[in-house]
Image (cartoon, rainbow, N blue to C red; front, side):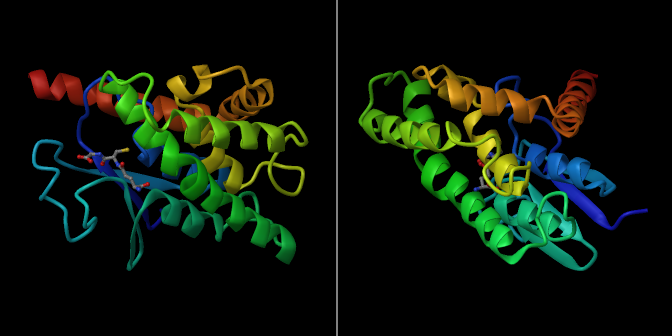
Length: 212
Ligand SMILES: N[C@@H](CCC(=O)N[C@@H](CS)C(=O)NCC(=O)O)C(=O)O
């Protein structure tokens, strides 16, 4: 019996299924062999119903015994530190793993998400195109030189980077073969497949309850 609980929403519309960020925590647990429970807060009152756990009214958040953590990146880091599978033991590799985890969130996702929101709201050629192009080209250059970001093997850095890059519109934006191959390698991993299938099943089951 594990003390780890991943909190997510009880239901979401079709669009975000497979991309709700509890998947990052599920994926980390699956890679690391950490057993976990999944619990939910209500989608309908999400802006206010769990502000004590997540001050922005978002998910996911993680409980591990007495420790409570919000921000998916912080949750993945917490889980990674329990497992050499996700966080190498070597000091330099550890530093590089953390560095690329932050880079995924703070150099790529920082622009890919707002770019995607503008695009979704009908502004296909928006003012963030230049910035997102430049970041995606830069990470393409890096991924052209290596299979995984750190230590010649999959780590928590790849978990976050691949999760940021696997968004369909990001993958379709330009021709970046090294990035495409990297994402394909990451999401072919059994741990990702299981995490994704479980999230999709969770929301599918919620449909039945919502319409009952
Ligand atoms: N930086 C946060 C972002 C969390 C986030 O965007 N969560 C989305 C689901 S993936 C959410 O809760 N959306 C509901 C809302 O904002 O109302 C993290 O990585 O945990």
